[in-house]
Amino acid sequence: MIHYRVGGIRVAEDISLDSMRSGGSDGRFNRRAIRVDEAQGRVLAAAARAAIEQVPLAEAGGRRLAQQLLATSDWPPFARAGLDGYAVRAADTAQASPESPAALRVIDTVAAGEPALAAVQPGTAARIMTGAPVPQGADAVVMLEQTAEGMAGDERTALVKAAARPGQNVAPQGEEFRLGSPIAEPGELLRPGHIALLGTFGYADVPVYKRPRVAVFATGSELLPVAAPLAPGLIRDSNSPMVAAMIRQHGGEPLLCGALPDEPEAVREALLGIGAEADMIVTTGGVSVGDYDAMAMLLRGLSPCEPAQQLSGVSQERLLFNRVSMRPGSPTSAAWMGGKLVLALSGNPGACFVGFELFAAPALRAMQGDPSPQHRKWKAVLAREIGKGSPHDRYIRVSLQYGEDGRIYADPLAFGKSSMTASIADAEAIAVIPSGRNGAAAGSIVEAWLLPQ
Ligand code: AMP
Ligand code: MG
Image 1 (cartoon, rainbow, N blue to C red):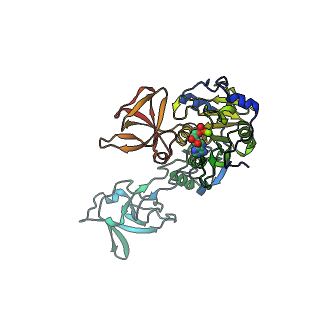
Image 2 (image 1 turned 30 degrees about the vertical axis):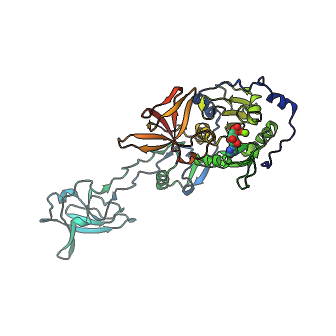
Image 3 (image 1 turned 180 degrees about the vertical axis):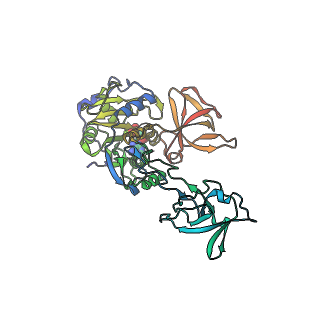
């Protein structure tokens, strides 16, 4: 549907757009910066909750649960032997020792998967296997290694060589869960342990939030498809596949739409043309104050949204913000267009990465019901100085290490400029360096927002 332009030839542009580009009277510098948390709040308010679908349990790992699930039985459902040995009455073994073992008549053998039919009476024991139901009357299981087999006349006996505690090696019925107690909450990310629980309680199909479908558009007349050879002045579009990988990391489904030329009308047409195919749109590039920054021009025409405005169901286009008090990526913008959230990230790969993490990632998590969609935040020791100050808080890419002092260190990565790509792969967290005249000294405590690994 959308093509990369090879050669960077621009088509004739419309006069009004030309006039928007000329001089400083076009409003391109009148963008009001809002705080990152406020921008996140506006994005989250516009992030619509995804629909629900049922998926087979074995495919539910990594999805987010759409409703609370309850235990459908006690767990364990019956008192279970924890190991192979003999089910006994603990009182019968109170005096037992290796020198004078307790001799108990063996009345039954219970394998896993079989019911325990005979009750253990005083002076008797039942041979039992791991996972088998503990017979009536028995209150402990003695491990096989602490017993010997004997005969009393023609009767089998168990010689128990150690005193058993009541309850020893028995998992009582309902020890972990009672019938009807909650086992997983809505919005929870289903990890392997949740899958085990859901299997335990018979949930063969699981209600999860649908993966949000996210259309990805790169903008920039200099962009080549990844498979193309380099040509003078052109670069490959690395943002689209990076953003697609990030969408997947956060549970979404990317819809790669290629690169658009730096032409606002073409961009608008493409974004609106995506229609019902996507739940959200991410664009990269063209949000700054350059003469050809198509997204910025496009968004400049939108009326701003009231901060408290509920956008779902609103058909008009609205600007959520077009400047954020942060570095990198202060021109990062967001809008409501075609009835969906549009996040317009910087084209600079480092800024694109940070912008996605700050805004698209929480939005995707919220769409899938995550009750706390913000990043996990740790305090970390800054491993080296951040030299210069900044009027905006800085969100720098760091690796994390344990220091010998047992504290966690955030180490700013080399090649960390917003325009740079080399350090993105090594980023384990984004450290927040507060705005101010000076940067931050090595050893100062910073907030580190953990990235998915
Ligand atoms: P922009 O945000 O359009 O001003 O672009 C900022 C810088 O990022 C420029 O050097 C662009 O060439 C580069 N850039 C823009 N889009 C992409 C992309 N999709 N992949 C890689 N680099 C890009
Ligand atoms: Mg550009």
